[in-house]
Length: 335
Image 1 (spheres, helix red, strand yellow):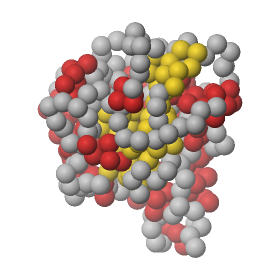
Image 2 (tube, rainbow, N blue to C red; image 1 turned 135 degrees about the vertical axis):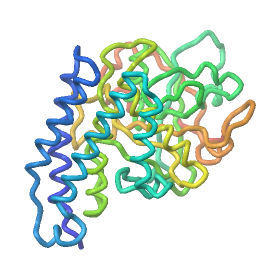
Image 3 (cartoon, rainbow, N blue to C red; image 1 turned 90 degrees about the horizontal axis):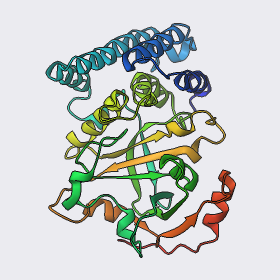
């Protein structure tokens, strides 16, 4: 059996360090923050050591370090081109990066793939609105006929519907900026598994090769995880998350990757290896587009419960949200 403890420790040490560093990204511009973070990352990488027997097989540490330096340089070039309005050059760099995937991003060395497994539970909430009755479909993705209402958010491509889920009711509430009252549905995964890119902090590492994949994707994970310093029509911190969604959509006919897992930026100050899975988020872009209605493929993958209403009042701790959820007997079916 492979000894993966050394590389898991490397990844977890990086995660602890950069969760602290990402919180510090306040007032500086996006590129300044990104360059500072990536320079610190490369400083840490230069200190990496590995076991001789592993370095002689799948984990060639010097080669990995050289490749990480190249990836960090490419990430900066992408953001600089975007900032200067040179989108043609930006997409040229992105395409060169993805050529390493042999035209199938799911097989990339740089983007680790995990599975969302059958019977896992996820949550989605909706702030209270004027509707008297909230139905299951109201908690699904934005219907295709009003896709013009899909705005720009961190893993949200404007005009393209997607389903956004949180692994706990509490993180879903945090993601919606803590509304005083809301409706929520509990979602159940019906597919045997759904393959997704894994950009979470403190991931489960099952092999040395997978650990190397997480390490090689780390510059992209950092670029996707910078907190937005200002909320406006133009949010540069959303550039890389949206590029990842574009990559998934571009490959959806030849790839079996249907979404992306990431850790909530709203939880960075409390995130650790013991509570991390409670703060996982999942984004599943629509797979088959239609003029109206909802994605058939996502409907087959997932069922959900009747929406329940909650007034937050004194539910200020995560345990209170968990207990409130347990009060309901959820019956799952398709929308």
